[in-house]
Amino acid sequence: MKNKNDKPSSQNLPWSALKSLLDDESKVVREGLEKFLLNNPKEGLTFLLSLGKGEDRYLAKRAQNMIEKLGWVDGAGDFLLFIRSLRYELETGWFLLDRSIYPDLETSTYSFFLDKLADRCRELMLQPSSPRMTCEVINRVLFHEYGFRGARQNFENPQNSFLHQVLDRREGLPITLCCVYILIARRIGFELDPIGTPGRFMVGCFAEKHPFYIDCWAGGRFLELEQMEDKLGVLPDEESGANLLPVTVADTLSRACRNLCRHYAQAEDEANSRLFLSFVQEFEKVHQEASNA
Image (cartoon, rainbow, N blue to C red; front, side):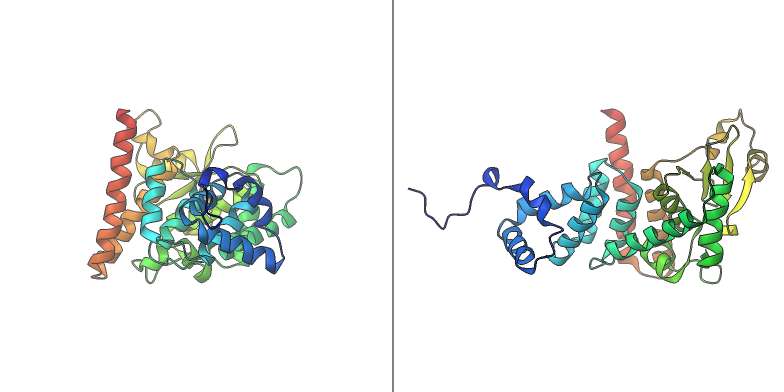
C-alpha cells in the first residue's frame, strides 16, 4: 500500500502543465510552484533548464529567473554543461560564462536592457531599409545615444570580457562589443556574424552581394572586403582568407575564455586563470570528440 506522504515519481509529475504557471502573477500560485520544484529538485532543474533553451524567449527568461530565485546556480558547472551540450547559442552561452564568476547574476535584467536597445533601433528604422542603413541605425543607438566604446585605458581588466559588465559600464573589448552588436541586430530580425580576425574581433554582414564588416572597437566603422584584405595582408584565394569568414559560437566563447585566462594571469589571479584555461580545454576536447564521432 502506498503511503500518502510518498513523493510522486518524476513520471507522474505534471511538468507540461507547469509552463503556464511560470508567468502567473498570483503570490499563492508562485509560492506553490516554488514549493513543488524544491520538493523535486533534480527533475525541477532539468525542467527549467529545458525551458531556458527553448524558442519561447519570454518563457526562457521566466525559467531562468526561477532557477536564480531557487538558488540552483553552479556557475562554473553550468558553463561546463553548456560546453558539453553542443547546443550553442551566443546570448545564453555568454551569460553562463559571466555566471562562472558571478553566480548570483540576474541575467534577465540584461536581456531586457538588450531588448530596450533593440526597441530604440526599431523606432529609428525606415522601411524599406538596406543592410547598411540598418547597421547605421545600430551604430547611432549603440555608440552615440548610449555611448558604448572600447576600453582603451584599462584593456586588460577582466571586467571587459563579461557581457553584463560591458552593458553596465558601456565599454569593453572588441569581442564583447561585437557580441552586443550582434544580439541587438538579431532582436530586430537582422542576422550578422562574428568574425574572428587575428588581433581584433569584428562583425560581418553577408546580406548584400559583397560582404562588409563593422569594427565595433572603432565605433562601428564600416570596412569593405578589400580594406579587410589589405588590413590582414591576405588575398581572397589564400587559405588565410578564412579569417574573413564567420566563426562559430563555440569559437567566439572559447576566444573570450582565452582572453580571460590571460587577463587573470596578468592580474596574478591564478585560480581564475586556471578556471578559464579549463574552459578552453573543454571546448577543444568537445570539438575533437565531435569531429571523431
